[in-house]
Image (cartoon, rainbow, N blue to C red; front, top):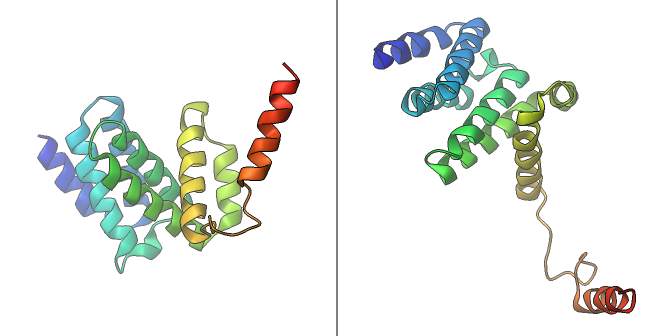
Length: 155
């Protein structure tokens, strides 16, 4: 039965943004129900849509929601693969519209905020890596020693 639903969801998301929305909702319900394999298959198919020639039918909000679903899946299975897929979804969404994602993040329920914040931070660190050998880095031995000395003198 789950395989049939996955096939129906996969077929519908190739046609329109509404089909993508239905597939995202289906994956979210599967996650809520603990049907990890069905949710994984649906999310994987949606990811192929985002990275393929039909990527324009996926809105930035849908791509971001899919990223959050991949993060939820990462807590149950395929941790590293699902986090990487979530980052791909969020990066796709940011390429489409940064402004819409600001509104999207403001509308997230509290239980999804942590996923979005983590995704955003990982994505930023990939796109703008910090040079850890730079003299002007935020962390260096002298400032750490000064912080520790100040902390000890205040106690």
